[in-house]
Image (cartoon, rainbow, N blue to C red; front, side, top):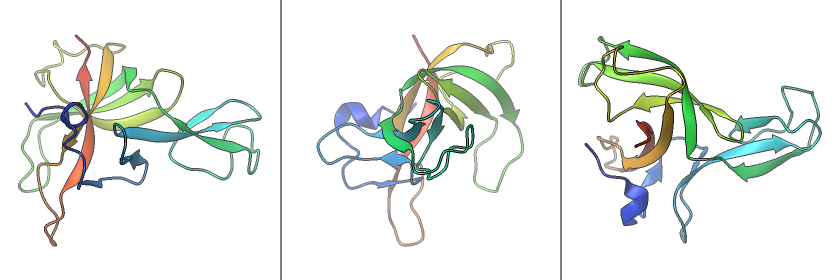
Length: 146
């Protein structure tokens, strides 16, 4: 299983796999979010308009929690060539707000071993492949909390 890049400081020099994954020079990677100052709704990534109350230009950038709980999952048995299957695709509700899709690691892809509502943590890892130019990326996964 991959190690947590955030623990070893290995994220430096890696590019974020998605725009809402932030890699500060002087800290650990995190998922960027937005909170509406009008209704307190929380979203993943940057926004100008709140999709909950419609407020415009009232969203502030926040660092989302690395803790959450499994909302729903699917075990994937067929994927693109070169993608190892089976794997667990999951949607997680983060503590304090924000819902995020990603892959669940550290658990067998067996419905008997995965429970809705189980506590998870977001971990940051080097992506398993480079792009066509040879760039390496940092990605995130979900892992059951011990």
